[in-house]
Length: 355
Ligand code: 6MZ
Image 1 (cartoon, rainbow, N blue to C red):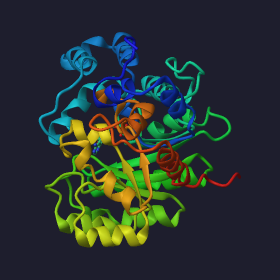
Image 2 (image 1 turned 135 degrees about the horizontal axis):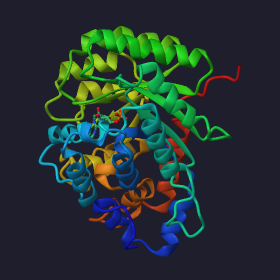
Image 3 (image 1 turned 180 degrees about the horizontal axis):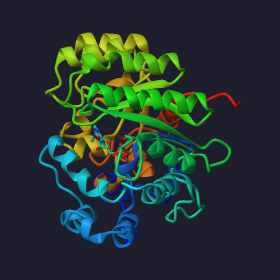
Image 4 (image 1 turned 120 degrees about the vertical axis):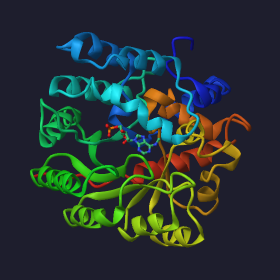
């Protein structure tokens, strides 16, 4: 529809489907397992946060221009340009009230009735929302995570959980603090289900991070790692991350033969973000997307949105990319799409046992 906030590849695929096919996709139970909080804030919420900001004068002057750009749709020359979008967004989610409002809007986007669905289904049956805790003048990292968890836990019947992200750019001390807080919150019975490694794919020395992920695993948290997202990720970096024994992998676009052997034998679910990969230009066309390879090998995958704000996609739109005929989509059958959606549901991390 013309009021749709989605655009680009996912919107084109959705528009090519019959009403019956769209209804089929909306009704399909699917889990969103790879969505970054600050990458999924709806534009109207960002505008509201900018208008409400207690000290408008302290906002960087590029914030309004940044929001205008996001609304128009960003064009990235390459993935490294992507990370420059976040400082403007972060300026708006740096106190607990604003962060809570952003988290509420993102949870609603995936879990409340989709205004565009005639039968009022939500985009996702289940959401594992991920976010990188930031310290600011207004909150500690622990307070950041508690603020997001308060919103996640408002969803009864266990429809949502939190993954705590470590950024590759974090120094080892901060990364350690973040894992310790994630483990402590989990032990307090809060709905933290996993830890993630994200951020600029070439940043940081991952040697320093091994202990953090083993600590998280010991505490019963799931581990998911952004891995081999670009051609520049080295063989060594990829194998090192695989040695952390992740339960799931983000992107895993450029695995070489050795790495693929490890992934296939571990059966780590691969979180696939089709629009994200096309827009960040790490994959040149759907026809060349590594998803095809995983499907042929019957390897578990989960179809996800990554960042609905800059990519202007939706979970239903990403599934439309599976079902739409080539070249707009991959041309999978409904039966195959049912199987793919089922894999997202079975790849969820375990919830903490009730205390
Ligand atoms: C790697 C990504 C990403 O955590 O502040 N992020 N990291 N690859 C991607 N693929 C395109 N998309 C998002 O959400 C925003 C942060 O998520 C990470 C980046 O570190 C970004 O700053 P949170 O809620």
